[in-house]
Image 1 (cartoon, helix red, strand yellow):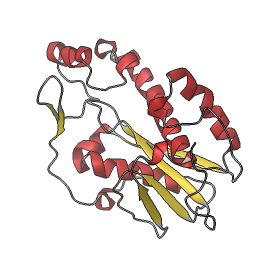
Image 2 (tube, rainbow, N blue to C red):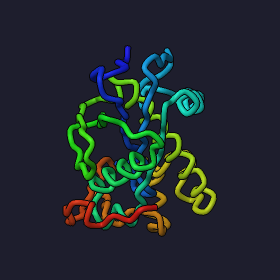
Image 3 (cartoon, rainbow, N blue to C red):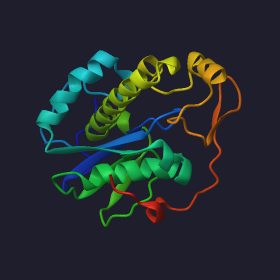
Length: 213
C-alpha cells in the first residue's frame, strides 16, 4: 500500500515526470499535494496501471487534491540543456504553478537540482511508494499522452498515437523511412535497435536557460 506521508509536519508535494526516454516530443512533469486522508485503492505508479485506469484516476486526483499542476519542457529545450536538466525544468514549472505552496517536495528518483527555497527529498521508486508521487506520475503521463496524440494528427507516419514518441521498432522504422520531423529530439541518436542515447554535451544547470511557459 502506498504511504500517504514521508513525514507528518510539512505539507508535501509529490513530483514526477514522464517522457524522458522518448525520441520525440516534450517531457512533462506534475506536482500534486494530496489531502491527509486521501484514499484510493486503484492509485499506484502509473507504469503499473492500464491506460484506462490512469485516465479514470486523473479526474479523481484533480478533484480531491489540495493542489495540482503540470509543467513541460519542449524538445528544443531538451536538445539545448539535456534531458535530465529539462526534466528538472518541467518539475519546477509544475511546482511554481501550484496554487498552494508546499513545505516539502517529494521527488521521484535519486537526483534533483533545486532552484527554490523549498526543502526536498529524493526517493528512488517513489512513485511506487508514496501516494502523492504516484498521483503526479499519473498526471504527467496522461497529459503527455494527450499531447502526443494531438501531434499524431500532424505527423501520423510515426505512430505517436500508439507509441507516444517512445523508440518502438515501428517508430524507429518510420524514422528510417521518413527521417526526423520537427518534433524529434536531435540530441537523441539511434545507437541500436534497442538503445537510445542522449548525446547532448551541455550539462550546465538549467537555471541558466530558464524560459517560463
